[in-house]
Length: 171
Image (cartoon, rainbow, N blue to C red; front, side):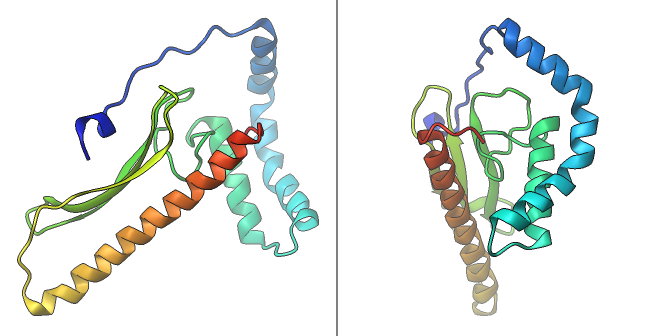
């Protein structure tokens, strides 16, 4: 990980059009009503749309949609980006790491997509070393495997979101 990878920029949001302001007023006025019915509506739609429907999956979808509506989940990269500032332009997730006994990062994985239009990236970095006793190795390698599984999961989500954005569909 280098300074370029971890740098975030501050962007200002573009001017809001009159139509956008009207939509925002309606959404603000009805947000609580929408949130109240969303789980039931999503459940019904998921039952009809997905052959492999489960109530848990429908609940996760509704929870994500509610998070996007109230601004606690990134609308562009839900489940990947951990920036919860409404209207943010830079996307990131620096929350996955394995540390040594002193708290130094041995290995970390993360996600960045900056507002400069560059591609989304999953990074693997770190590499402070640690001498382990033989009986400690299995626990540390299991932790590293879990970390790399998290990198795979982030990459899969970013690939799916990139396909959605490329197709012109908004999340």
